[in-house]
Length: 424
Ligand SMILES: *Cc1c(COP(=O)(O)O)cnc(C)c1O
Image 1 (cartoon, rainbow, N blue to C red):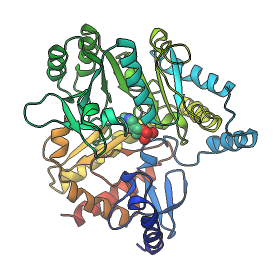
Image 2 (cartoon, rainbow, N blue to C red; image 1 turned 120 degrees about the vertical axis):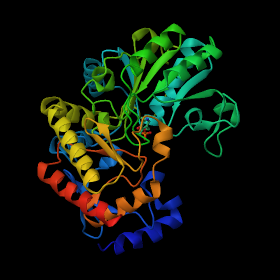
Image 3 (cartoon, rainbow, N blue to C red; image 1 turned 90 degrees about the horizontal axis):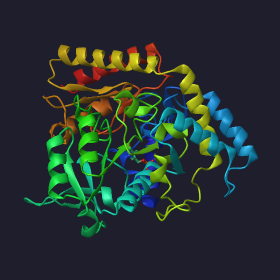
């Protein structure tokens, strides 16, 4: 595959932008593919290569790229203006739509990214409870801000350490870590920090370490123990919201969190985030309450118009096709792994999937981290060479869209077949 124009653009970009990218997950060795345009299930790079895309912008494009209903909504709105600094009927209609799908979000606020949504959700939880500590799961990702960029502390320390230079130890130390799918670990943190934990934040299905499903009963038990200890339960549904069902993971698994964060699919491919909860909690947000939040582009008309159009379309198309395609993809990949006698795992749920290059089922970050991430990158390149673009990391999730055809899936499975052979 000729990628010389991408290489050329990368050489220029890396002098001006760290790694030549605007977000680190987009970078891969020796240089990323620069994209010129996209349509449906396809990306077209600057060298004219056509790629079947399973990165899908890292999740938002559940209808595929440049869906006609979304494009039309954006064009119409752009002509009416893109930002007013004043409320719009679009936001109201979006809020009504979200509330219908997520009854737990009686009130909400729109922001511009998932990072903002979780940052403000955590501030809100602290503001409402008057408590300082939060619990997050190892391997859970909630955006790129101080309280969630943490890793396990050294030795027997129960408090965490910064997972990035520039995060103050004081900020990291207010975040406690538990393994995913380990309810006893959460319970014991809540017990040993009695009355001090404001919130437990969790991706109901992990998506940022590859897809990891909750064990039967894990989410309901999280609901019970947080309630017992007066800590708020935050479901970070930035990936799962509208992807696992119109009502997200909370509807699929029938567990009602206190606070929900949304993003990605919600914006129809434009920048967006949202956090919401029952009214008594959300009434603590400014200007009604003492918890401050603000944003110039928050609830901007373009994102609202794109999101409304996308959710309307998704609601009428439904999730059955996505579910079926996800099942077909996972079962075909599992069959390939058996044929190639590779002891790897196929993981995922709904329209999310991934191959974990590890010889045991992946239940938490430890299993995922045991995967052969280097070998995975050889798979990534072997797939790219064959016209299939997946996220360039073992620790990301592949996403199907309503635009992926059965023919796309057949071609993709054939590409995996050859790629798995090539990396033996
Ligand atoms: C992507 C993601 C975020 C961050 O959203 P951005 O829009 O990239 O800021 C937060 N939480 C989860 C679960 C995500 O997948």
